[in-house]
Amino acid sequence: KCLWLGTKASIEQKNVACALQINSVNDLPVASVVCPETCDTCPKGPSSQPSPSPTTSMAPSFQGDCSQNGNSRFLYAVKENTGEKIWRTCNRLTGWTEKKKENACRRDYGNGSEAKFMCRTTCGTCPSVAQRMGSVM
Image (cartoon, rainbow, N blue to C red; front, side):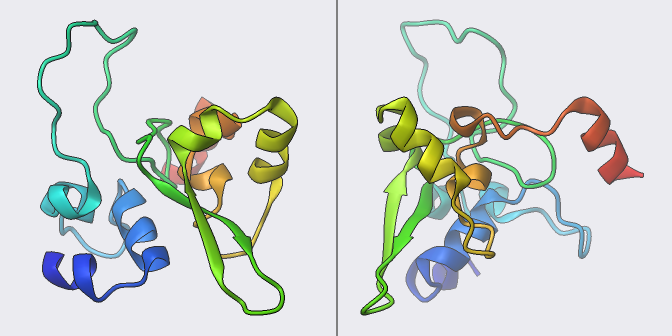
């Protein structure tokens, strides 16, 4: 399955599969755990700088947590004349002006690969604790 995800899946399919933290369909582990190289979620070596707070995952989640992988790609735009999809990374989004960030974070293409889902920390779209508890119940 990792081979298919890395070579045959569309960027959109790969982003969505790698972003999931909870498998709500069955009890199988999620792609970011099973396919860390494909999803770019391999643990990084020790850093000389301590992290400001502990993290449990490097992949973003649609279901609850607010971890963000800077290498995650989000759908930035779709060209009207060709339908070509333009992708950007969360790292790139982080460096944009506030106005440009807000515009990117507001976009909605209805497919779950938008910045507001893939770059939740940067976009400020982390669900509240109450929202997370409601989605579990």
